[in-house]
Length: 351
Length: 78
Image (cartoon, rainbow over all chains, first blue to last red; front, side, top):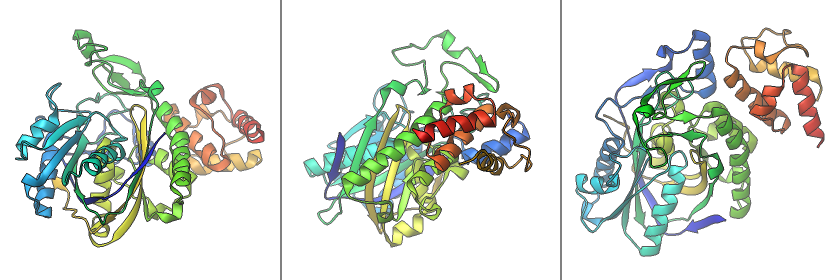
């Protein structure tokens, strides 16, 4: 079982960047008015930010990282590790993290690598970077993550297109002997890998002419195999059962309860699913912030984006104990607990 | 739990449905146009209110409110 705690690593700051271009689901022409009402009420997604052509995930992360480094007044020479976690990298190869090392002007002796995960990414990414930093006594680290999902969704697929928004984030971590512990519990269920998938373009199904052929899958769903396909019912079934179960197990292993946390931050998947998980765990609504209404499902960026847009003043001025849960594509899911104290949290950046 | 309580909970959940229109023999597929979304709402409702898990496959086999009631009560007893 992957349950462990990391000592002496502190989160010093979190920043997020989104594209300027906003799309409202009220303007989504593939749905009737009644369907739009239902979609917005139950998924919670009213508007989303969409990257215009040429804006990549790494561009969004770059701007978030630059602003965060400035706010913290960090010397770039001191950054020893950069991790880029995303499922929308700049190229098939090389790794986007290495490009970002250069673009951010980080030293050559900074280690950099990519992690390929989605919705579970914030919890996973934090566990990886804090483990490495703690084990190796690296002093400063940057965890960059997010996705531009709008390019992979078919506009004529009502089961994906109106849900996803684009965002990139940066989290700064520091080796600090006075830091409290972070605790993680990480899981995988690869038997469900086809439930959220872009079938073509990897080695299993090489990209071909056919990859671009648009097919009518069902009513309101037209897409090609190069597009994202989502089995909403399977994701929903799985997450409302497994996520509360894992969190209850986490409470037991960690010796904590719901009341020990100031806030419960979930990946912003869809409102109905998240609210079901919240109610099953008996968290009060005021303890569970959402950014999904304005930004949609922003994949691995959703937890840090929620902190920046909904909790800025709190994390800048207070000490907050957080329970985190990331879940989705893979299926992959993770639970984490950590505290934030007077961190740098610059205003949301719009590109 | 009785079927009246389930019917009330369903009516509260679907705000476009008028009070008293949901009956034991009401067919779910007539409640709205969007079956996949409707399914998620019903799964969530049953899970939170009765701590019973029903799946998408269950719902494909279920037609009426009475069918749903039978499935939920059977699983509550287990």
